[in-house]
Image (cartoon, rainbow, N blue to C red; front, side, top):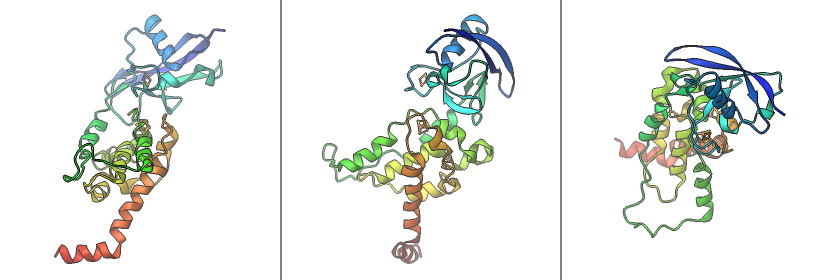
Amino acid sequence: MGYKAKFRVWRGEGGEGKLEDFTVEVNEGEVVLDIIHRLQATQAPDLAVRWNCKAGKCGSCSMEINGKPRLGCMTRMSTFTEDETITVTPMRTFPVIKDLVTDVSFNYQKAREIPSFTPPASVKPGEYRMQQIDVERSQEFRKCIECFMCNNVCHVIRDHEENKTNFAGPRFLMRIAELDMHPYDVADRKDAAQEEHGLGYCNITKCCTEVCPEHIKITDNALIPMKERVVDRRYDPLVWLGNKIFKR
Ligand code: SF4
Ligand code: F3S
Ligand code: FES
């Protein structure tokens, strides 16, 4: 059975904007993105929203629904009561281009700063042999759809714009962890994780893990193990002694 829902949607460009109220039809089985599309079709033709797959796989439709980061295409209207006002706003951590569309280029910049997979020169493609457990470890991280909701929700940059230059965010700290744990990656990732990508800023609040639509255990399986690997390196007495001798 259809009903009329109350929607409050952020409209604006650049730093300027405000919430606008709409009353809009909802039908059984619909998701929030369907309602945004109905608003475009019937009341607000210039309402900007980014989307692509409508199947929870492209990571484009990230937005904040009642203050929580969500994929618009995977948020069922049946999770709200019919008399509830549903507030839809753009991701707060990234600059707004227009309405619900944010400029997520911060994330691509951070991706570029991480050197790619670096196998040893002595092993040729086709000669890699990995244990299943190593394959599975990186497969979990590779489920990432780059929705950037984890980076959006992490307080280190959500509340502190000034940290953006020094903090890659959970998505890319996870990428560094994935490469560091890869048995054939020989690049030195540990010092860079700490000194260039801000691993130490993460105080394990786990908000990133809570919002991940792919249910990746970002904190437990990537960030905490990476912190342990960095600590092992720094506080291993042999490594410490080696550094003392060879850095003279
Ligand atoms: Fe999105 Fe999860 Fe990937 Fe973060 S780790 S970008 S929340 S899919
Ligand atoms: Fe931020 Fe996730 Fe750490 S939300 S503080 S990166 S556990
Ligand atoms: Fe692709 Fe929502 S439109 S994840």
